[in-house]
Length: 88
Image 1: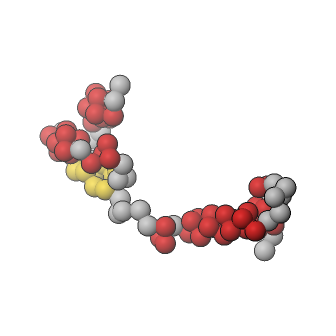
Image 2 (image 1 turned 60 degrees about the vertical axis):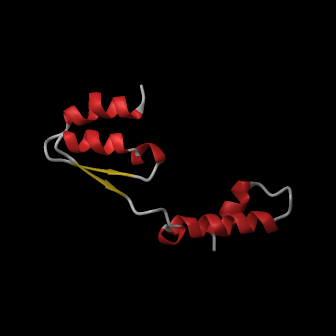
């Protein structure tokens, strides 16, 4: 079962009218048929803003961990790198 079928057969019938569906920017969510199904059911479709790593705090930690891993001795485990990073 694809997303379109799940949406039309399961999700939309279970929602109270009007509802607002908030979706990410996955290509499947951007298809016009998805918007048409949602709006035909009396609902509204909104999308999260485009992804920006600067707005996601965890991305800064991931970046720092990648850097720490790059400069760690080759036999250093990822667990050790994370523990050292979190101890700071």
